[in-house]
Every structure is written in structure tokens, then in C-alpha cells.
Amino acid sequence: MVFLFILIILIGTLPLLKTVRYIRLEERIRRNGISTSGIVTSIKTTRYQRGPATDRVHVRYGSIIPGQYHTADFVAKYGKYRTGDSVPVKYLPEKTDKIVVAEKRGYWLMLIFSIALLLFVFFAVYKIHEMVQADGGYT
Image (cartoon, rainbow, N blue to C red; front, top):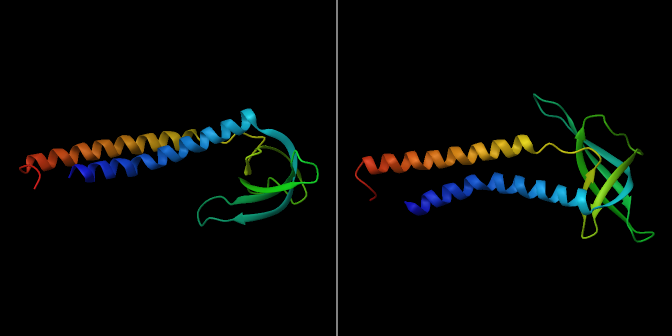
């Protein structure tokens, strides 16, 4: 039963770990990244049934090595960019497919949600343990 509790807690920590990883990568790119400008090469719009549409913007940008170009993509509000637009880009030389555009992404809502989810998982495991103990212990 203890292994099941540990498994449930580990699964509950995955969203928090992933969110922290994204925040740390973005901050590392903002702090140590190389600034350049990219050109929007294509845009793919995703429409949700009951929500706003978003654009996946594909960008081609120059490297620090003359004549070498990289491509990457990011998600933006619907209609914010057009094909051919110039976009300020920051990237790390070792991770050229991960870029940051000028505006800062809001990970705080996801961070708060994942912390709340983890707290709920801890509470649920505690309550399950309490119920099992009331029924006479583990079998």
C-alpha cells in the first residue's frame, strides 16, 4: 500500500516539475540568450470548440555563425503575427529549437494550479490512509 501512495504522490508532482522546468528554461534563455530577429515563415491556427483560437508561429532566425539559420516555433494569440513579420528572438546556442519572444509568458497560473494539485494529492493520500487504518489496517 505504501508503494501505491508513493506512486500517487509521484504522479501528482509531475505537473509541478514540468512547470518549474519550463520557468527555469525561459529564465535561462532570457538571462543568457543571444538576441536576434527572426522572420515569421508560417502560422498554423488551432481553434478550440469553446475557447479562443491560438496561433503556432514558425520562425526562421539567423545564428551567430554567418549564413547559418535555425527554425523554431512558439504559441501566440490569434492574429497577432502575420507571415513575413519580424520578431525579436532570444535563444541559447545549445538549444536552438527553444526560443523566447519579447513578451514574458505567464506560468504563474500553472504554477499555482500544480501546487494546489499536489496539496490535494497529499490530502487524498492522507485520507485514504486514514480510511484503510479505520477498516483494520493493510491486508
